[in-house]
Image (cartoon, rainbow, N blue to C red; front, side, top):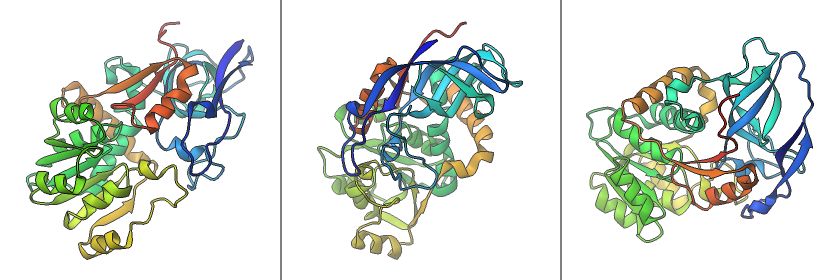
Length: 351
């Protein structure tokens, strides 16, 4: 059986910007038979995420991320449907997901790396398992619960950077749901700012490309900032930390502005900003959602419930075709998406 896959064609270099040409689509032969414990699945949706930039380097800079190898198939989050199974816990027609899904139209996998998913949790929107009802949703929810220290009724203000992205667009809504009285988003276009305030319920939004972030934070957060959900790092983060309150908290979700630079993670703050952080006792602890696997199942249930109740709005940017994986990733890294960036590989849900 001939299938298509995407391999890593070249590395952008530690300080380079990734481009679509770093990836290459090719055809390979998939064995006709599977062995005991294996399943053959057809890929429906694939995820592209900012952390993947680290996997393009020979050294990812992280103990839990393995580098992609040149000329080898790329992998990440995926959702698919089982076409054939020799794994006791999965049957033909089951929908499954994994964090380690090869970028391939069909693939043979060990059944034990797959997790069966229930389409009813997402009202049939299977791609949501790669976003709001999946890892980004869990990252936002558990990150805020663990590191945000929100107390309902205490009039807290939250700022979210990268607020129109997969995690940021959820984090702002979750901040409100858990009790923040004011949520302000930071993003890079007027369209995204309007989306945050008109559709997602953010109280205000700042366009960092056209506005002075520090001035706008002062205007929009007159009582200071109590919780900062940080997706970007860099100058934006420095401007926010400068106006955070005593004993406030940073949820360190990502540092996308730093991923094309050869710096440690989390990147050290400039000395003046670090001095402010220490003086005001602002927590800035590394957060890794994989350390909270016991919270995944209740977290998914909570996110699904909010979605079904209309309390959690979900936005995706969908690109079609395996051949466009590289273009989708390049677009993600330059802010081309609103909400979760998804690539649809096949919409054929029936066998």
